[in-house]
Length: 147
Image (tube, rainbow, N blue to C red):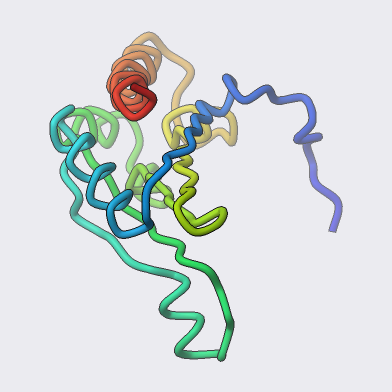
């Protein structure tokens, strides 16, 4: 299958990609990321461990991998006022995986930016405000994770 768009045209900033490495054990990293997200206005309505699921269901031997589905209800409400299709990307995930014991990678991709790039969000000032607002919240989370 060929893509209709060349992904190499996007920079990390276009996608709202953020990443940080944490020097701690996996379970500690999950709790640490959760606490910081909550401190900055994200609730965690969804969470799961794909590695646990895959290890159990298909006999994988995956290292720890965890998804915290973060949501700022006020921003999500404004976003849904602009496009109901955004629910297809909900929630804003913070992904934590173990690079090696004691080394965890935290990754985030802006669903607000991606929604605009794939055409399910409007190209208007209201959406730009939503992108800016979520970007500032995520930036604060990653600034604290990096400190």
